[in-house]
Image 1: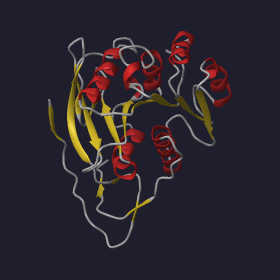
Image 2 (image 1 turned 60 degrees about the vertical axis):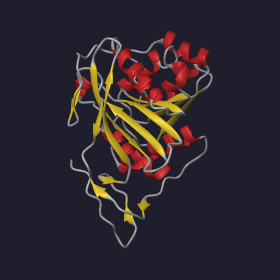
Image 3 (image 1 turned 135 degrees about the vertical axis):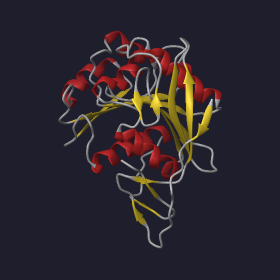
Length: 263
């Protein structure tokens, strides 16, 4: 079941608009609901380029819900505000089971990364049924654990092109999960903040060495939550470059209508 997402009030400007934290660029947005194989209803939003076929689709997996993570965690919210317009990339955001946000609450209870495999599978199934192609997983913190544990295994692996990981803690994902990615051969880009609270670049490079195709990139000055426009822009450019297959510099100005998101 789908419904129309709340409309933003766009305004034109005679001059280019600086893209800031709350800037919303035009996109085709709709609220969606996912149904998992074990019968849970999950709420989410899908943002796509206006009037154009997406060149890629991101299935995003948010940080730990028991620590405040949800579909509106700021990097993903800004991805949905910018990437459809700037790079023709569609963004699917959703709350995993038991997680609430302004969009609503997903049914079920947090299961520490166990039953959440149903949530990931439901999201990937949704984009496949929509006919979307060039599908990539993007995980952040707890979301990276779901990517690593279930993304390179069926029924997900055959439908995705690879994954981008932001701040992986490698708490729940183990060596067997890394080995599954190595065996699948799917691309893996791993962005690790210099000052991460859980896993920093040198150790990350050692642990991901089990995955020959994994590219670990340390980001100087960044922290686990990627706070600061400089770091958000870096993350979005890395994601866009991976899924589009070429280096991307996203503009920091927009010629056209913009809206302002409410905090």
